[in-house]
Amino acid sequence: MQMKLPRGTRDILPGEVEKWHYVERVFQSICERFQYEEIRTPIFEHTELFQRGVGDTTDIVSKEMYTFEDKKNRSLTLRPEGTASVVRAFVEHKLFGQVNQPVKLYYSGPMFRYERPQGARQRQFTQMGLEALGSNDPAIDAEIISLAMAFYKELGLENIELVINSLGDKESRAKHKEALVAHFEPRIDEFCADCQVRLHKNPLRILDCKVDHAHPLIATAPSILKFLNEESTAYFEKVKTYLDALGIAYTVDPTLVRGLDYYNHTTFEIMSTAEGFGAKSTLCGGGRYHGLVQEFDGPETPGIGFGLGVERLFAALDVEGIELPIAHDLDCYVITATESAEVTAVSIVNTLRLNGFSVEKDYMGRKMKGQLKDADRKNARFTMILGDTEIENNVCQLKNMQTGEQTEIQLDDIVAGLQQLKGDK
Image 1 (tube, one colour):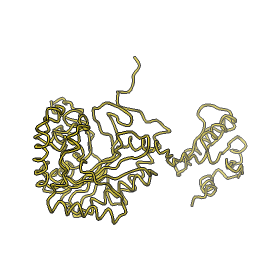
Image 2 (cartoon, rainbow, N blue to C red):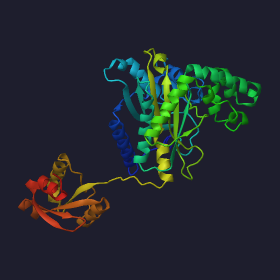
Image 3 (cartoon, helix red, strand yellow):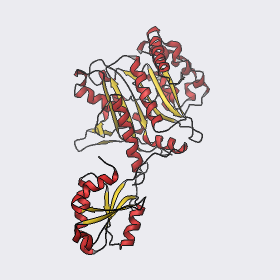
Image 4 (cartoon, helix red, strand yellow):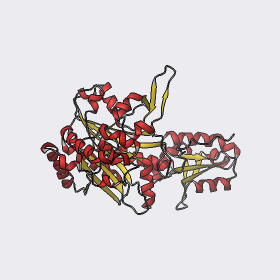
């Protein structure tokens, strides 16, 4: 029986994986410039973590999690998102007691959701994200939005749009909840079974329903912005003021609620507006959460963060026709003219590699002509030819493959010689 990939997963092969490396390096670089530090959490956690942290009214928890029991009948779940794990680690390791506050963390890794694979949506997908824990300052809301926008801009995306909203504080959300229940309840039987359950548990989630998104009551639902109290309104205005100061354009969308239960105050999404991307255009989403740290038995701690899908990022890059500047550098290809030169070639290749050069040689028994063709296919900058005469005289010929210029170098000085030819210090 031929073994194949599980549905909703994919292999990332050489030739493509270099693009992933590039994107990961850009994300790491920009996070570090903004003073975020990396955190790595387990791929699976206790199921209760996501039930409590993400919310049992969400599609993620109710429908999409990969949950299993271990040999001691403990319920474990492959992580479907990153925030709950980061906050769990923040509490468990008492990062709230660190001198440097707020605690600013970023992560990258595979997540798992059981949904219908389509386009860039997979059951195993890669998410990058960050969390800032400990600050109530609306300036940090603007900071993480700025970081996300800068990341996409640095990769060359031009057709992106920032959409923001405020869900207000607990008091504002309570009043809005009452209004939503009153709005939907008379016709709730027209909605899906999930929305009927959500009506009294979390009616805000009805606005984000994938099944009933076109129902006319969604469009006429009372706006959260009309229920923001003075404090929540002032907070949202400050966030917008900071975004204006940063020169970041945005659109306010009162229906933007995000898909997780722990959000309040600022929520946002960054979308692709490129023609041909499709209806599901969200590249990145996040927002502020108060109460999640306490949910995991930590002290009262505000937080804000975002998550972005790497597969969707690549889809956006493809739609805009952006080629990432991937370098396939091969400094030198060592060619052997005789079989007796093989031992010396192996030694030189290893010496150069250990001194920081990218070096290759033939392992397929090719003749010199075949080795030269292989060096050309691999875009070698230099070739080194070794034969009996060269070894006897302790020299080699280094050929610049672009200019055709050849230079004779003592084998004992090969490291310094190649460095000089490359222009390295």
